[in-house]
Amino acid sequence: MARRMIAAAGASLLAVTLGACGSSTVVADAPGFDVPERTNESGRYVSVDGAVPMSIDELAAESSLVVAGTFVEEVETTSEGDIIGQGGDPGGLPLVLWSFTVDRVVDGAESLAGTTIQVTQAPGVEGYTASASEGLEAVVFLNQYPGTDVYAVAGLGAGVLADTEDGLRAANATTEDLRRDVAAHDTLDAVASIAAG
Amino acid sequence: MKVLRFGRRRRAAITALVAATLVAGGLALAAPASAYKLNGCRFSGTAPGISVYNGAIIAKYVTATSAGMSRWNAKALGPTFLSVTSSSARKVLVTGWNSAESYYAVTSGSCSSGIWSGTVTFTWNDTTVHSFSVTALRTIATHEFGHTLGIADIAQAANCSGTKRVMEQGPNKWSCDWGTEPWTDDINGVKYIY
Image (cartoon, rainbow over all chains, first blue to last red; front, side, top):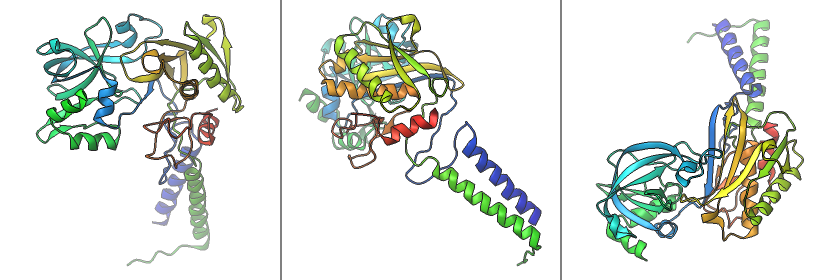
């Protein structure tokens, strides 16, 4: 028993020492502290920095089009550089294009009602909230890439309000304020009223 | 209940091990006495010269970019940003375009085993920041250069009473006015990396 305890203590000491000295992830944790992590990555790193919306009003102010409809499916993986027409280096944001059927235009170009547009998502990008899924019914705050039928979601992806049985929900809101504001204005008419503002 | 009996030597060995474990554990817990986060990518070496090429962007972005570089250089942390006029010599490309996305700026690059491979790109979004003050643009530039050094965003607290960091990202980004320089926590992050 004592040998097992010594072995366990030794293993524990070894693990802690390796964690403290190694170049890989530091495993220590403490209340209130985020420990260093991701110290040895491979792959592409992308970070977006921008305004974090705290209300429907802010989302509306950031967008030129508000529509209600359904995310259908992923259409294409591309880069923002290709959409803008400046492909190559730099490629900019890696984007996934989703087809989205517009049932109703809440605010903006009425002619889009009944059409299918493409909506961008940037999954895996630091600072971006991706929330599209097949069949997701939602109210979406958008901005158009000029000269294309591609639209970006306002608020670094936060402008997707899921239409649930309980009403509209900002399921992936990056701020609690936005989540609360949507819960307090959880109908299409309420959002339309704010967007028309 | 079975009582464990240890000999004196064995008891001493266990005591030493437990003490060492606690000390090492304490060090491991104390080491990250800050809240910076790493993005997993860095330039190689302990004091790399980081050549920055401004690619065809308008004057106020060039000015803000230079300020961002200078603010980090002033901290003398090892890595040093250097402006270059030849695109081929660049490690960082600063550019800009009009995006429909809501970001102010994007930093992107590929890394291999934790080291940037190829050019790291810092892209301004003229659509969202064209009317920003010089002060705000300098804040953004300082933040983005933090990403190039290897530190990541920190989610901002609900008020401005917490630790100052230029790497904070959140709704109080402007009201806290923390973008004027890299602060202690940001500096600790870069020191940890280099």
